[in-house]
Length: 149
Image (tube, rainbow, N blue to C red; front, side, top):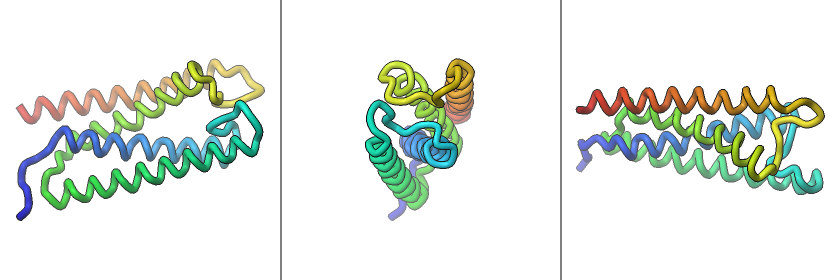
């Protein structure tokens, strides 16, 4: 028997996982591989940097696969709240971007956006994108919550 109860919190969480994994994949493909600006861990050898990129890639693929399985389960049970799912997607995208820019780049200093240049403009754009994506997610979450009440 199929469940018909909508699960807004789960819809938000599942799509946040997909969003975080998706933005991690974009980061890893574009900035680590295509542009070769940095590795996930740049405080050692290039070889260790490549291993760290491989581990990041593994984590993002596992996150995407798990998220898609959970998403399919929500759809199968007719429990998906589409407005909450959109909010979750943007919260995941922005949350990962902010975590990477603030924690990985500035607090832990495992890597920077780019080397050999003034990083301040890159940091502002990197974190600005994270703030903008998160703001969209918060706005969508507020709208979704108001629509349910």
